[in-house]
Image 1 (spheres, one colour):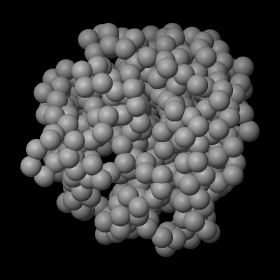
Image 2 (cartoon, helix red, strand yellow):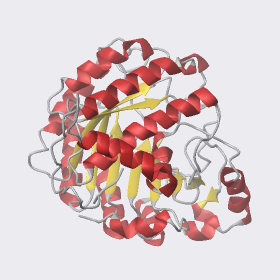
Image 3 (cartoon, rainbow, N blue to C red):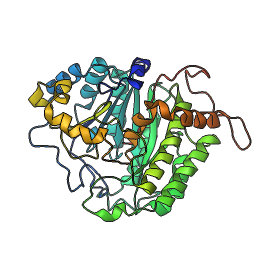
Image 4 (cartoon, helix red, strand yellow):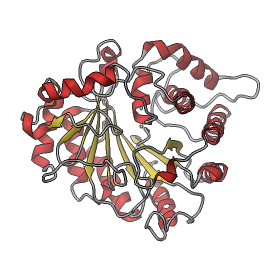
Length: 390
């Protein structure tokens, strides 16, 4: 497997991006009103044609080694060339993790393309996250996806059939926490816990300047109660866990991350340094580059800089746009940002270690989680991370 240990220097030297989120398409077969990318008032990926495979290959070639590539959109499994795109990053950037979120509306297609990616990209952990935002089909109409819940569950089942044949597959459910489902979190958590095979479950706070702002009227205490329950399930061994080496460390990071996100919501301020624009970048399908998903400010278009991300980041426009982030002028609850901000911030390691030890147990009311495949009690993680991360 592509090792994450190559990126340990980034703990101290944050001089180049190692996490890329690639919004590969704006096409989608759903119309979720809580989608921050397609339903935000300020959503603008720039004019121009979508990047070609040759252009993506050149951008990738110049990016050097990456820890994590997150495909996003839109619905990425609508792309006929998704397997080829994945292969480009796998071969040239050697990422430890590649993430593929999906609304699950095309069960057979998603299963087929996932298996082709697994075969073509054997040295990366392939994470498929199926979106389930309710315990039944009550939200299907609002998503513009009749039968969406049933199809998402079927997608989960079909992709789950690949787990026994592909050790590099990770399967999970992601739930966007918003005003319409915040009172049904216990039902959703129970539903996910009862799915077979058992996978991971993440809850992502709604974000973006949405056209319909009522979905952002959330009760932060209900978010805390839901994420506290996820933490308890991880500690007592009833929740699905990652299969890759270092799974306990990732679970500990998940718990710490959700606690920091809750505090961010309550205190309405940044709590930890943000590495967006230094360790993390966002690339849109038209070549615009952003420091993160929540800031509409573009650092420039990679086409205007010879497809060289490093050259773009040295431009006056990019430096001016990144200065406020370094100065702490913004804050957000974006889970992918928090993953990087925790795992590459030594000041948070004592808190991270505390959560790790609580997961390891044994102790009163706790059950020691079984080792993940390839994990040892003393060895370092071989894979870290996950729209929500892995």
